[in-house]
Image (cartoon, rainbow, N blue to C red):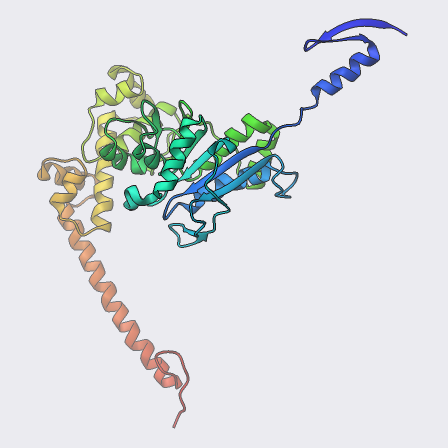
Length: 387
């Protein structure tokens, strides 16, 4: 027999046959301990954030869509096992009482409506999170779950990822925390915070890949019909501003502008936040957008004012201030340049259109009632006997 000494991964094999067999054995993944996840659902929690995150792990836990908790186990935790209602009105029944936090690799807090404030979770759940943090368990805040972690003092000296939509709410409540509203999720010092929405799927893929490998992560993503996963540092999608720009610095600058509409930032500050000088920043906008950052910023605020005019009954002065214009005449002038008529003329047109619609609705109602009467039916649609 031909002999050869071969060292691989600190193991030594003395024959070709043994070497090949040893390589095969070492390339097989060793048995893994299942990933264990505990969920804490806030009052009026966001159902989509919970279900998207959980379903990725469910699909990663077993072959196909068998859903057996082989590679991943999960519990919905509660102090009293009473059903917890989502913001949509759907109720989820907890599967386990609060126990030893060390039993879990991740404790995931799924936030919801901000109006619940400190009452989003109970005292026992809050104490459980404190014990989990003390035990070194990784805490995850999905959607506004980051607010809950901050209220408990569990995000000190850490960056906190929040949705651009709730950025102002977060800064108002936690002015001394470092809010990140231009990324999908952030991992910092045993804490993971996620903006919510579809980004909970991206976070799930990120964690599955870490523990179970790329193929398993992609399988879960593809079964759920996601084209591809995004990295945590990817830009949060933002409301349209007339055009879509794929350049990352342009996209991030636009997001920063949209997050500061009522109190506009200086162009120099925005440039500094994305790591550019003012001159570089303005040249970038000129080359890609065809306008200066200042003009684009003003255009975003004018469009926002136009939306407020159509969707609220606020006064024109209030709308001007909400859109970051301290001078109402200055606002009206730029609004007219953009939309062809002043804000007051736009509102008059809207009022006239509404009046016409109301008249048309009344005419239709009376005509419909006459037709029903002629056909021998009541206005509620039931038939009546003809004489």
